Image (cartoon, rainbow, N blue to C red; front, side):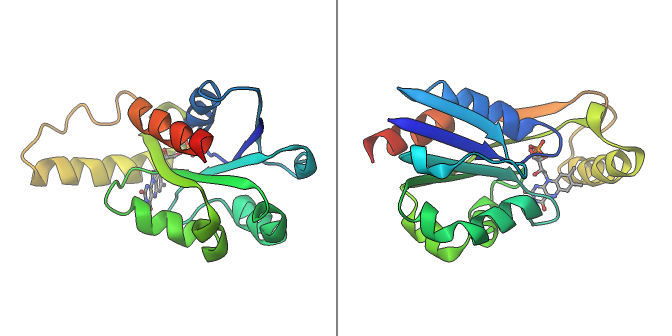
Length: 170
Ligand SMILES: Cc1cc2nc3c(=O)[nH]c(=O)nc-3n(C[C@H](O)[C@H](O)[C@H](O)COP(=O)(O)O)c2cc1C
C-alpha cells in the first residue's frame, strides 16, 4: 500500500492533521503540501486530500487540483478531509469543497479537526475571529476575556483513527 496525503493550509492545522493521519497507515506514506510541483499520482494506490475552510470555501489550489485530476482520482482509493471550526456545517462544507463525483467515489470523508492559530494571524484576521468568538461566548454566558490570548487546537485523534481505519479497510 503506497499512500499520498496531499493538503492545503493557511495556518498549519491541516498540516498537523495530515502528519497525525500519516502515522496511522502501513507501508510508504508521503505527506505533501499541494503546490505547483505536486507528485505524479501514478505511483500511489491511495490518495488522501485535505484542506481548510475560510468563509465557507476550501483553498482554490485544492479546487483547481481536483478539477484537473478528477478522472485520475476516481481510479484511486480516495479519502477526503477538512479542517474547519464549524462541526455542524462540516458535512456541507466538505460537499461544497470537493467535486460531487469525488465525494461519491471517496472511501471515507471526515472533519479531522480545526484550530485558531492567533499567533500566526494578521491584525484584521485576529480582530475578526476574536470578535466572533467573544460575541458567541457572551451569548452562551461564558467568559470572553481570555479569547485570542492563546491558540485554540481542536484535532480529533478519534476521528483521525476512524478515518484511517475506514481507508485501510477499503
Ligand atoms: C478568517 C477565517 C475564516 C474562517 N471561516 C470558516 C468557515 O467559514 N467555516 C468553518 O467551519 N471554519 C472557518 N474557519 C476556521 C478554519 O477553517 C480553521 O481555523 C482551520 O483549522 C484552519 O486550518 P489551517 O490552519 O490548516 O488553515 C475560519 C478561520 C478564519 C481564521
